[in-house]
Amino acid sequence: MDEGSISGITITAGSLTGLSVAAESYVAGYTTDYTFNFTPTHAVGAGGYVTIDFDSDYDASSAYLISPLDVYSLSSKSANQVVLSVVQTLGTGVVQNPVIGTIVNPGSVKEVTFTITTQNFGQNNIDTAISPAISTQAAPMTSVSMSSISSIALDLTSYTLDFTAVNAIEIGGKVEITFDADYDLTEAEYSSGTI
Image 1 (tube, rainbow, N blue to C red):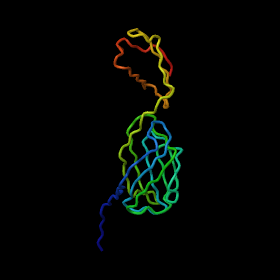
Image 2 (tube, one colour; image 1 turned 90 degrees about the horizontal axis):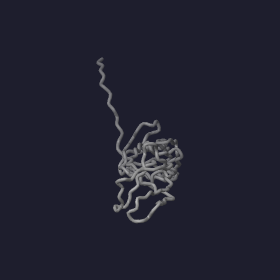
Image 3 (cartoon, rainbow, N blue to C red; image 1 turned 90 degrees about the vertical axis):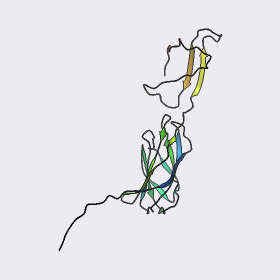
């Protein structure tokens, strides 16, 4: 009798196609709903999973499944990941579009991507893909007002700016104020204020 062995092979995940992500709002710091569109290359049986990984600046810890409730149920959620349980088989080439609610956008403007992975009941990967990048948008400040000691042309004066920010301004961050081009700011300096 002869005997021999060969080295193992690595099985890699297939690719999801048609991946796109859309939000009800892209405003930084806002809580919103996200729709994840993708098409499985390989079927995912009932009992399998769809894992959605978010950028580290998202907060998905309060996420819930909006739809379709006959295809998925919420398995788990954390700050940066939502896992859906597959209730009804996801067929090969059949477009999927789960909608997840109560996602908190990053607190600043940035480009982000999402990784979606389908898995079997043993949580072994089947298909995966990274979404095209989307960008969050600047949040509008509220209660913005500006006053000055003097409004006479060519007077040297001081301005006071009041505003309420939607998102926290971290230590080391900055507030940028843009004046009309007719102002002379060569001697401008910060005087005082609270944030």
